[in-house]
Image 1 (cartoon, rainbow, N blue to C red):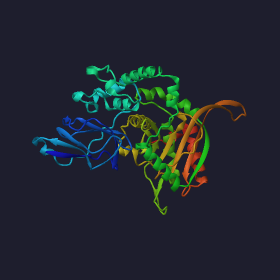
Image 2 (image 1 turned 180 degrees about the horizontal axis):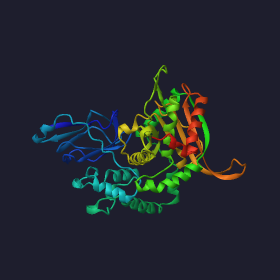
Image 3 (image 1 turned 60 degrees about the vertical axis):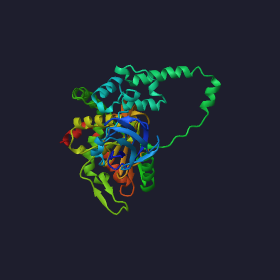
Image 4 (image 1 turned 180 degrees about the vertical axis):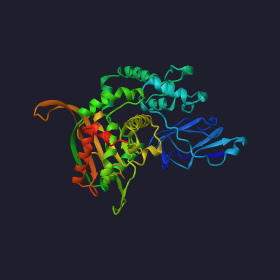
Length: 418
């Protein structure tokens, strides 16, 4: 008998997704738990597996089309043994696929440890993880043409890169005239997934929220010295100590004195909700686009715990493995543009938050000390954007001064840390 496979819940609040690639074709025999499709939500690439054993009789969507949650994804013809599975499937555990550009050794270990991330070698399918298949698609490479270096011909990331290098060398043999013609052609592609969601959110934020930006200069010389002293101890406990944990703990100490920056307002701006927890979002630049996971209850975490969470969420964001609850509930956000470049920015507020801060890069610059002498100092510029409906410039300035005091004199945080 024929059964419609219903696309199950693949994340809280997600109602549709892009069909990135079919791993099956009409008429193909499939086994239960076999990978059938890759779909892209607004947060990550998700692998869909079959709940039945049978023959694919119809695909309801073409590659690149938008599939609807709780609607038929494909039709499958099953034997009588499959009748017991005719009920609508339970929500699918989201096995978000690693798209990190990290080390190949780590990627191989992930593949060995996560059997759900592999493709069956049956039906002449290339043996590779979804992350490797995605890399091949992004590079415009037919993965079946790539010689795998792993067991049973399994294709790894370095095989894709080697194949791409080889192909590039061959392409260079094409005449310069042909290359010039190709280079002048315009390329059009749709805005989808996370980039489309970000575009809508940022447009909505700018239209609804009257932004104002407040910039300040911080002397982080003492903080950099302290960070260098603590790095070995943190590393011994598995944590990479960046500037971010100090910034977050300083915020957690300052916000209780300025609760308006840790608040929410309703749609028509007639009511303010002051939040009890300080959940700090951190903007992450990922292969999927801009993601803003957040660390919950920073006020209750130690510096080490914050550092471990920063590391974990950054890696999860890069690999597309963030959970839905890690993407919601932030009360204020921080964007560290300085790791890429730039000193001053005008960050856009991430609704329903009312403030956001952008950190610029740290520079060694000449500054006068208390004796009037010029000396080299570590300087970082920060840019705050506030919701001018409820935050005024004077409040932002006082708040920033208090927070700046903790950052520039990190030893003073010890009197407040719990």
